[in-house]
Image (cartoon, rainbow, N blue to C red; front, side, top):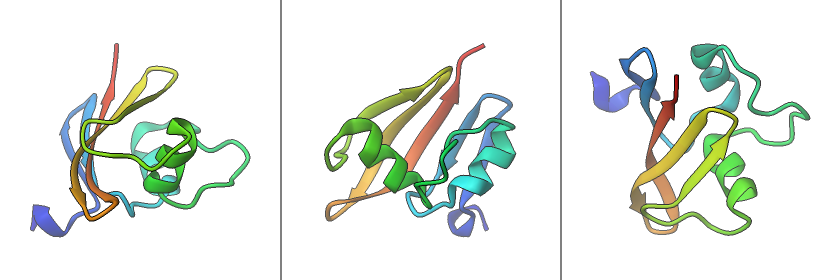
Length: 87
């Protein structure tokens, strides 16, 4: 059931992730180190750090060639985030 999955691969460069997805899981999918000092446990924590504030719908943040876009919020927490890798 895709609705229950933490990471859904759309194609080789595009994913939909839940905000509480662990960074380690996403790093494994993307084969990249997003969290070199290990300070963040979830995608939401990393996003908040990158933005310097609480994310909101439409917020975008980038690490190297990876773009995070907040697609859906539940209260003040992102619950659905697009992750796109540019070629």
